[in-house]
Amino acid sequence: MDLARPDRQERLERLAAEYALGTLPGRVRARLARVARSEPRVAAAIEAWETRLAVLAAAVPGVAPSPRVWERIVSRLRLSAGIPAAPAAAPWWERLAFWKTLTATAFAVALALGIALLAQRPEPAQPLVAVLAGADGKPALIASARRSEPFLLVKAVGAAPVAPGKALELWMLPQGQPPRSLGVLPAGEVVRVPLAGPSDTALANIPALAVSLEPTGGSPTGLPTGPVLYSGRIERMY
Amino acid sequence: MADAVPDRNARVAALLARVALSDQQAFAELYRQTSPHLYAVALRILREPAAAEEILQEAYVNVWHHAGTYVAARSQPLTWLTAIVRNRCLDQLRRREVDTVTMSAEGDDEPAFDLPSGDPSPADLLLEGADAQSVRDCVDALDAGPKQAIALAFFQGLSHAELAAHMQEPLGTVKSWVRRGLERLKRCLDGAGFAR
Image 1: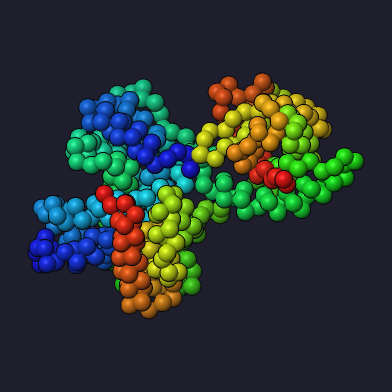
Image 2: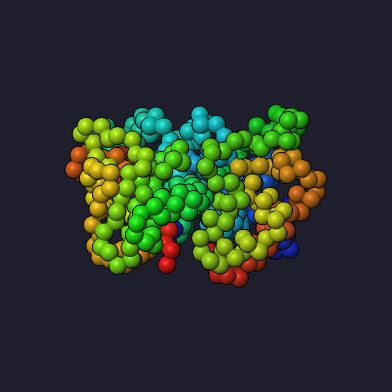
């Protein structure tokens, strides 16, 4: 069949769409790929569909391949040694799954636990609260602030002890941007973490906080280098 | 997501241009920036790390040799890279099918494979991927059946027969969901200015 003929446009369109989506049976798929190599019109129809659907592929959270993949590529292509080696995985704060997990669990945890705990204080409840929980979902730290105060109060409620030579560093997680450090958490059951200004402006557009394990003195790079131990969404009750 | 797709495209295009000139540093950087995404795409479709690694390796070898053909022809480098990987995965899957007659009985009541827990489902990805509002509207406008069928096909490489088994619907129904869903998506996307 001459797929490139104008009157076959509709059928070509459908085949190209299903080729790009991937649902064509093997033989049809192979045949269409062959035709596309010699018929620019067919190749263009496929590419148009690949472009349309590529918008969707952008959502797949990255997974770091094993370092041996890069090693094999280097050896097959006989690239010179000294090439910067295989990449790390997408950083955790860029992973979609991280944000989805936060969204799914954090609000219920914050409401059920954070507010109850804070309500035990003599003063009125802080309107800005983030319950930072570990991978097991157990709350480790509770950060809270009043709107007008330029600091966060961070209360340890279940954080594991930190090994010598290590420190906990607190991060703001603006969505779609790299984390911004709020500094190393001092030791203590309740500590004060200074903010750049009143909490409602300093933390505006910051949906979540996280704590990573870093060398004493904090991350040497300005971005989290150690594992993220705890994280939680900021809930605002104003 | 890390940054807007257009920014990433511009960065990757610049790297590809240097790779076309056999710049090894640029190639390493391209690998660093794109391999986690491409590997994830392959892994979802092939479901076996060894097979996905093999495809990834082939794809980058191919990119090293053919970056020059890309640069002149296309404007969307991430699309190009993703298409190379997806097509190689799908070719391999469809070749495997020739040897297997039908899916096993237990395939009917179990998902094709288990995603790592916490990973978004295909349907979630379909919506998440639609980051521009107009694309999101288009995906949202699909009926549930077509939406699910397209998501499973796109993200997990299911064929018509596998979709029918997975969704427990007649083959004809699934085929027409896919066809109508794609037609509708095209009309909507092109209408919203997402044509090439």
